[in-house]
Length: 88
View 1 (spheres, rainbow, N blue to C red):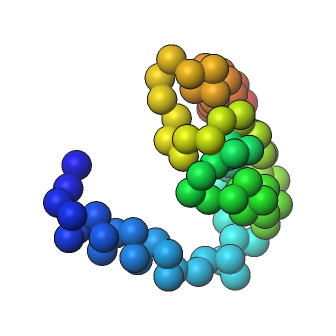
View 2: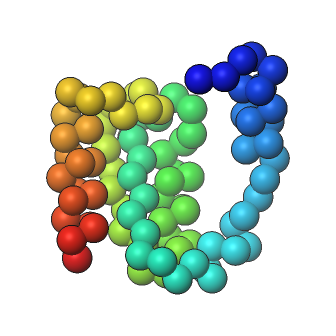
View 3: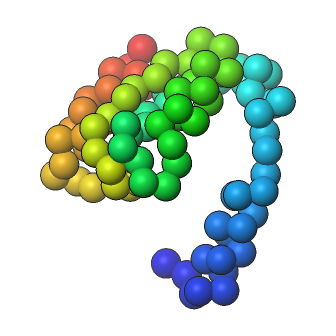
């Protein structure tokens, strides 16, 4: 949690940083999960992020909420996929 001023600063910074040119240099195993109906970040941005990272896996999830909430089907699917990803 944070106060309104810090929340605004964090959101503003994230909205202005562009790391797309750095993505091809990522060497770490990567799993990108993104909701089809994400109300904050368009689904295609998640797909593009995964496509730009060599060897990244993309996990589409259903739902509109930007955050995954425990108890949702999308949470269960993500947790299962993350477990398999981390074990591989």
